[in-house]
Length: 263
Image 1 (cartoon, rainbow, N blue to C red):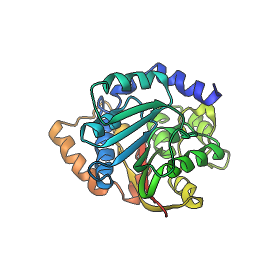
Image 2 (image 1 turned 180 degrees about the vertical axis):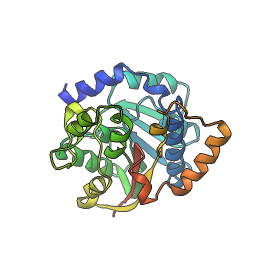
Image 3 (image 1 turned 120 degrees about the vertical axis):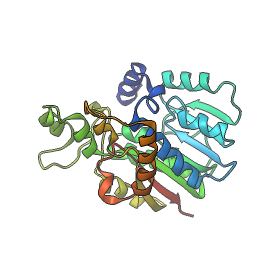
Image 4 (image 1 turned 90 degrees about the vertical axis):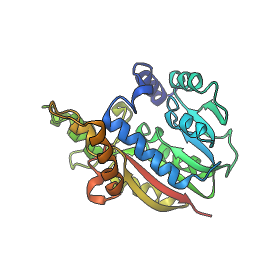
């Protein structure tokens, strides 16, 4: 087992990943936004692969909607939950696997490829580009690829404004405030332009970059934060109308990069 896999597996073995997208308003918004964008590009009956499927929140929901879903998850404990929760659902198959090696799948199999977890936990340029290459390879020509990543600036705002800002700078930047990536970070964040530039050497066509949870993770840390169901519904509408605005992207913890595979 590689050091990366050991670190990532140890983390997910100790948390409740299955409830992450419904136990907070920012998780609910991330889920609603991500599903909105999947539905924009996945035609009825489409073949979908989710690489880094976690406990299957997206994969299971999509299979229930009639999509033909293949779920790939690295962490065994997550995969066990996914398989338990999908045991009576048709149109979904699951495998344990790494985003860096999808050799079990032939080229150009899937209409929509979701690369949702791996980019949080890949640190070397070699591994990052290998994961992108594999996601592109298994996608059909003109198919759509949605890639989740983290904003390093949201990481700083959400996690290091409690008196630990110096530690956050040391963790995420070099002496010239250039973003750095290394295994012991566990979760690695990106400058948005930096992330978008990763795809310039790959055969893809850029569609958009989307903020998926806005500023809600930071807001929910406030003692006076309140948001009723009605208020949240309005916020979702506001967010979906503004989530591609460049000036708002960096304040969102989670983002989606959306592109098409070139012929």
